[in-house]
Length: 255
Image (cartoon, helix red, strand yellow):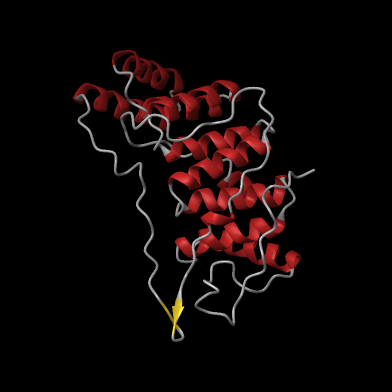
């Protein structure tokens, strides 16, 4: 399970002080809501082949990086200081500096996401979940907050919620490799749906140029269990010889 802990549990520090985005774009499930798995097959990237040659794939833009706005210089400096303090293990100092930012400017998403990271380190998962949701409330394009939220939900045993959160992440950015990989691991280890896991692991590898050797090894192991040798990312309409196995309907809730 070392790879699970490295990929799905490892929450990276949010490094952007992104400001609030457009409201009403996505909606996370409410507390106590019955949660069914959301469809995700539509987010698998498709490579196209014409006359035996693969065409270059043009990944969509990361919406979080496209957020541009003027941020108070003092907030930027405090954020950098908080990041340094967190790196040194001075979590109380980091929280104090981030608290100052959130009190002075309620339009910044990044500080809340880092507060969530700190809460995870302190094993305060419910608090972390609340902080990540706050970051998303402020900026619904903060895909880093979505993947972090999905991770902490998984750590709390909320596997269907985590799946929903990752599905919403891919709705925002279908070409997000980390979301595909985390979703693949969630499907495989926690939801017992290896076919879907294989599809999303292949998507992650494809989008990152097959550079992650650990992910590649896991993908091969999953493929040996499913018995599916064909690709999920080939556009079958342009390459009829290589047709992927159909992805099992996402509407079925895992037992």
